[in-house]
Length: 120
Image (cartoon, rainbow, N blue to C red; front, side, top):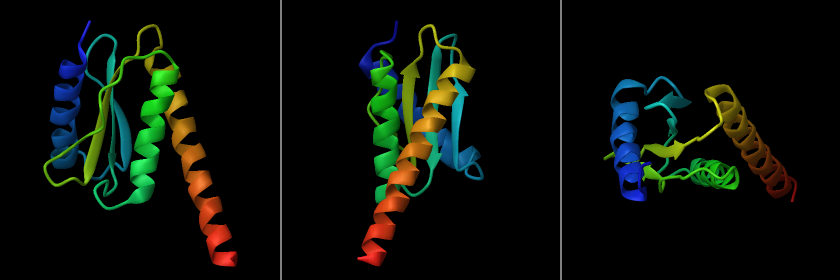
């Protein structure tokens, strides 16, 4: 089983890969081994609060599922983030569903907050 240091190294490496090779994909989930996945976002993490909130929520959701999780890692520019997760018994479809629902929930919260601010 991978340690936190190994998970962080994988996430860092895959953040750079996603930035260089997958920039046209806003978000994604990549298998990197028999039970490890990397979730990533190409969405301006360094300066985008929404991106930061969503990445944090995804990390927390994976932890709530009992999965070992890396810290949020970024590419050199800070635009792309990645999280490495050992999914254990969850398959890619189950894990992807949990992550997508988390992203949607966080996006909805942000949209609702902007309505409150705009309507003030």
